[in-house]
Amino acid sequence: MDYFLNTKIGQMIFAVILLAVVVLVLLGLASLADRMKGRGRTIASVAVFLGPGLLLLALGLIYPAIRTILMSFMDRRSTQFVGFDNYAWLFTATDSKQAFINTFLWVLLVPIISTVVGLLYAILIDGKRFEKLAKSLLFMPMAISFVGAGIIWKFVYEYRGASQTQRGLLNAIIVGLGGEPVRFLQDSPLNTIFLLIVMIWIQAGFAMVLLSAAIKAIPHDIVEAAMLDGVSRWQMFRNITVPSIRPTLVVVLTTITIATLKIFDITQTMTGAKFGTQVLANMMYDQSFTYGNNGYGSAMAVAIFALVIPIVLYNVRQMLINKEVRGA
Image (cartoon, rainbow, N blue to C red; front, top):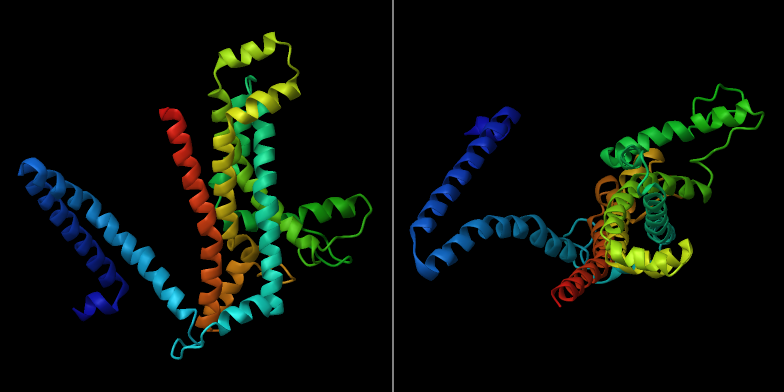
């Protein structure tokens, strides 16, 4: 037994065996449920298929959330109750204020600009011969991880001293044109804007795909009727296109907002969350794992969680409203 617990290979073998046992048990229970009749069969089937998912949800989400909330009221070692001291630090410390400001900029600019770029792109290429190729080019960054995108753009923004050969793409162009190299990632606050561009580059493709599908779903008779009435392109966009795709716009905006609130990889990869670029997720990581302060880290995790919840609830509410409208 020690072999399975103390060695990596043993742990992997144990995990595979445990997974196989769980699958066999579930298959056995499903077979028994299938042989039952009446209401008992329905209850058993629901328990078999929903039970594992609910158990994983409880162990992977609900329990960690409750534990994190409790730890946010404890000291750095989670041994002594300190009340709201961690939250007082969260809203008064200079570093956390900067993190809140940067996070606000990310949440304000990234979803709006990404959605606008994706929408304009979808409209401009709609019906063109090269539409599929153009969509693929913009969507391609979605296939790259945030860390990979951060590494790519770090080479684009890289700065070296004026006396050295510039390896960064932008600085090589600037120096080649006779200018001085620019510290894109070191000079605050513009470095935050340059980091935002990376996230917009990734998310614009996501927005474009969803909005393009929504535009194509607009009934042709509505478009033809508007054209017969002699509406301009701007009137068509404002009075026909935008109202018709409003549910999709809401989904795109809220989804990108949630992803942006959790942003960590790009800032950590490109600047190490230094030079005034830290956001809430980076500070949460630093406090919890670099400085070993579980109280501060948990308080920041709760703050991020609290910011995400209203957006999720709004998204769910909009989906229910849209479902009722379609049902009517």
